[in-house]
Image (cartoon, rainbow, N blue to C red; front, side, top):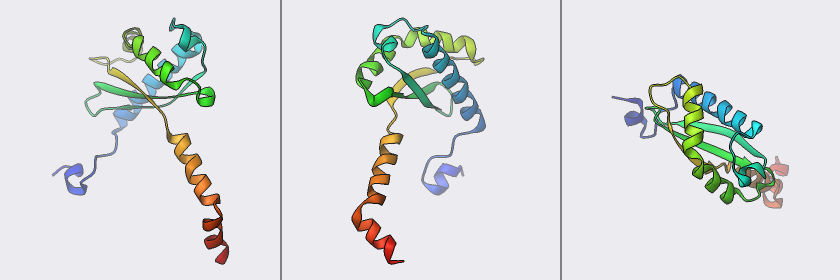
Length: 133
């Protein structure tokens, strides 16, 4: 029985998934830093790629992005989606795989979630409970 069937959840990513995800992330960050993606919206924003997650078969890569100041993230996502074919071709040359992964771009909400948790921990009600101990 596989691990995911025993626990009911999904299995953690394999070392290969993590390694290929990092290679894709580095190549995409390099493309963005060098301005090799010719799009006015992408050129007008500072874009960070904190994480790339790959499917177990390495055919689908979910790329999480953050824009500086969280400005126009939806427009940046659409621009990246428009340039997906070029980006995929560049990544295919950099990553030695049988098939280049299909890319899908998503907004990274990790930082927002961390801020929300910090705000909850700093709230007076939680402070009251912590100060009792």
